[in-house]
Length: 296
Image (cartoon, rainbow, N blue to C red; front, side, top):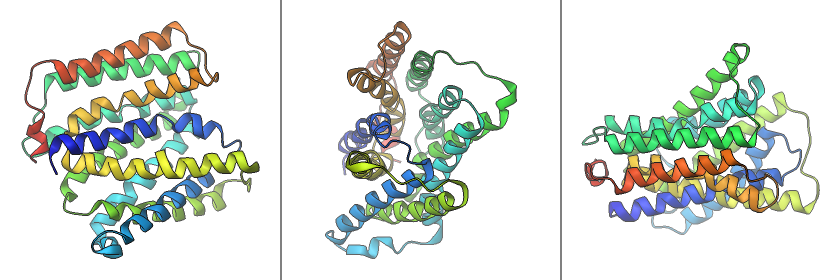
């Protein structure tokens, strides 16, 4: 698959993930691990149906244990650490640290064969992170790091590292068919269900609206997004996708503003401006060709 096409497919994940906050807000008081179990279950089942129609069918799920460790460790490990961070630290600070993952993707991509570290991609990622911090500060009325929440900050940083490692690490498993992600989703669903039973009160979604939001999450940002992201990471421009990922919080906030959930403020406008500037720096400034990593 051409690198440019794979990169465009990977960008679909960014668009889908931008709907995550709005759809999650529509799921009511559904506990996080139960929500994860239900949405990954929907995404996994749909993925199985897609895999069954492809050449080779469900044989794509027969993979050696390192592939499963990478896939399940990335999907479930990230969500476990992220929810832990939200429990141990204020959401604004936890989210700020967790959104280091696009920057880490750019840095980790340097370890790929032919990767290197492009100054324009690094600058674009730093601008994107600065813009994201402003978005989060504007939405949560400020960000103030407190040493008392160091455990939560550590969990958030670990979550960012796990997701970046999972994303860039997909390059080393580029011969594994994307259909295998269906198995990773189902395994994540089972593990999240066990965490729900162990740590959360039983509180099922209430009404057709909340169930519809859960199905929409499973189809889009917690379903198809992981499949197209896998294609982008395995065959596209890893560094460019890392920088472009900062569009997720920007588009997410704009959707919340459009829905009347969040007010448009000066920090939100400034944050969006920095993210757009970072994307332009990464894509329009002269520098090493994006295809360098894509041939890895």
